[in-house]
Amino acid sequence: MLNIREWEHVFKLDPDKEIDDHAIEQICESGTDAIMIGGTDNVTLEKVLNLMARVRRYTVPCVLEVSQVDAISPGFDMYFIPTVLNSPKRDWILGKHHLAIKEFGYMIDWKEMIVEGYCILNENSKVAQLTEANCDLSEEDIEAYALMVEKMFHLPVFYIEYSGKYGDPKIVKQVKDVLENTRLFYGGGIETVEQAKEMKQYADCIIVGNVIYENLEEALRTVKAVKE
Image (cartoon, rainbow, N blue to C red; front, side, top):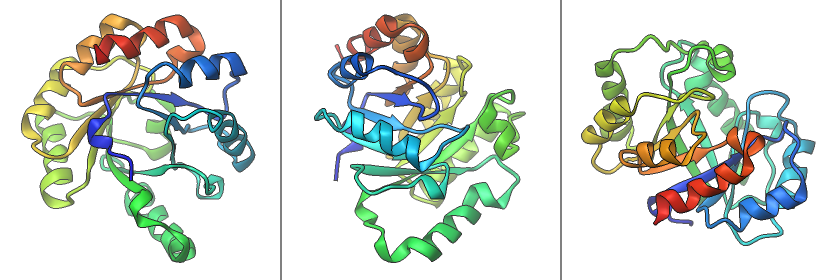
């Protein structure tokens, strides 16, 4: 199994967004620790397979963040499974997970599965609207979710997700201060080298996504900025 405890930087590619082969080559050979494929809108098996095949030309680890059961495919190095802790809907915490295991459990390689305790904090994001996440959380609420992930559920990853919006570094720092073993991933709104450095002061690993499609050169610079 890949050692996610060594990861500091991950690029996230959206199956529903257009990207050319030269850009994929630059991303895959940038020195990032992994390529994560995942998204919210129009995630289909065809789009996932197309993107995976293009990334698989390179040696960088390729992981699928599962959002649609019918878009899961063999061939990834790992499978990241979000459980959205601040959703009031059972489906997004364990409901869909139960159905997937009931149907496909016999063929799962459990060593390839990483469950992420997700805390969504941008109420205007598509993922917040889809999961109906309660984003009106105090700092104490968020810390409590982090402790639940580590101390109660023993999950390997706590993921602070601002999804399209740059978050509050103070919150990320406070969460990091309460975690001992669970890795802290941060994703959302990183558009510059400065933002990447700021969040990486506290998060164990940053996820860089949307800027790939808006300013590829700046996205590529975030790798060296956090791994120097």
